[in-house]
Length: 423
Ligand code: IZC
Ligand code: ZN
Image (cartoon, rainbow, N blue to C red):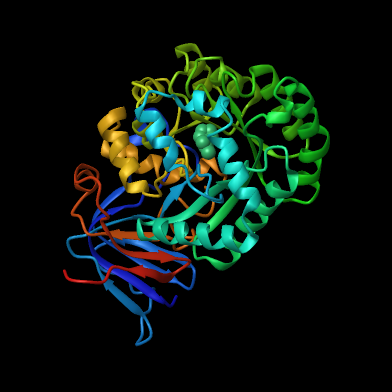
């Protein structure tokens, strides 16, 4: 078999290989490490992974591209399974409100926050949204990310805006090297005109939006912001069950700020993932473990909101909940595309080990968006989505925080990013 690309002399190759299922409990720290590793790629697929030299059946010729990874760490392309990628405007004005003591939910309740981004997203043209999100994807790629989930949710009452966001995500998926996976999040905030009648808005989502999204195959997942003062547990249950009956896979923003039983609901419904979980109850976490609901933790958001609490990742891991991490990139609670920073935050603030964190940003993240058969680990037959970092090992990458360690990013077997400048 002929290799089009070979990465050789890899000081530390973290394959994160396994059985294409989320890694939980002790498995979460198994990153399938190979010292002095070698990878061969043919076109867009991985055809060999091993130690030392390539075996004889892998042929190379003058067209084969060789990368020498001496002194470097090689991992699967990182995966960001929770972003609000496509949006208009920014919210730095809320930054000073926060410093003056206003909370995220106060700002939302007074018509700002998500409502302010909804107005900006509604006003922005398709091209403006596309260009802005494209620039964000470029940053993500430079940080070693090769697959990203993107939620809608800034249409709120205006379904046209919601569809515009989804169409932008679709076009980005076609044109940008990063794969963009769409999630419908019509239930992100209650429109101001439905303030006193949020059940009527829930009915609109169920009767009009979800059937349209499902029939036209515009998204694979359906998410909801289940939070005190936003959508209640009962409303979330109705929406997610309706989504499920239309073939959309349910996800839930659960117990981010107030503990209202979101983790329990995620388990009851069989959501693929529950996100945030900063205030989740111990009982809810245990139930998630029993039903294999993945916890998508967003430590950059806790850092930025500074509400004095973080998700209990250690309790989750001990109770068989597979943990993934993501940026939550959005203009309000986490305006940062930098997944490497979130990986460091996961270790520093959530006490996850560097190995657990790498699993969280690769195979477990892939499972949270149902891409585990294609990406998330370096294994024969998978897509050649690979990141090469200028660090000797995983612990070093996490510990030396806040800077970009990426040397080279390979997507579908092609080099799509290479660090330049002085070495
Ligand atoms: O725009 O504030 N948490 N939704 C739920 C967000 C954060 C995004 C935003
Ligand atoms: Zn979110």
